[in-house]
Image (cartoon, rainbow, N blue to C red):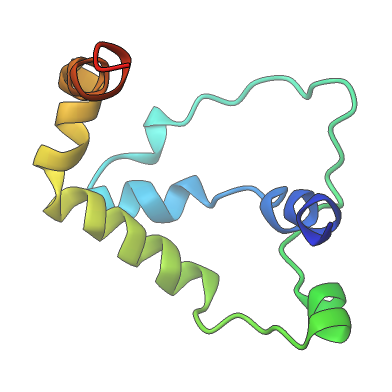
Length: 101
């Protein structure tokens, strides 16, 4: 299955937290550096070469543009994610799916 083969390689690159903080107008002083964890491999990066060679896929969006668009989406759709973290989504889920079985 291709997901098992490609997803860890695609997702293992770190998100540039400085880009996110800059877009939010926040200080880089919020970054808390921690010690490296066992098994952490600094060689990982987002590199579409393998999936391009095997499947012909190439990213349509540069990473920096995509992360900026993602952060902006969350800023523009605050009500959507606030309902999730407030517990309203869990209440809805239980009403619709758990109690109606």
